[in-house]
Image 1 (cartoon, rainbow, N blue to C red):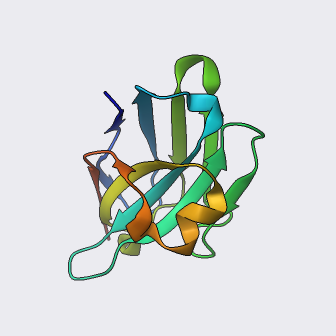
Image 2: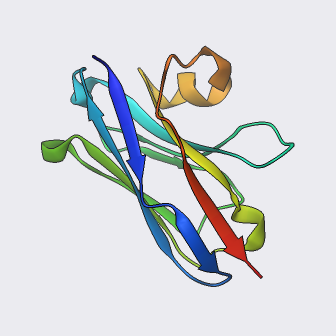
Length: 125
């Protein structure tokens, strides 16, 4: 069974940090890109950051560059999202997703077939 399981969300004050984890199973991890997306109440889902498990290439949305860092531990089939200097506007449900390439993930997230269940991040001001 193809599965992505996120963890690490929670409540944090502005300026604080959280680390999200996404554990993958049921597919060949090294052949895929893993991405983090988020969806705030009343807003459309948006990409946050992606990493290619094959070659380590990364992508960041402009809104998180310099604050968030994505990394991959291929031995553990796990992708991490280290989030520093969090802002209230980062509040959202964060989802991880898997697709063949970073480009395919960010062109249109609606075509991504593999998603985790989401983890809530709340940043208080």
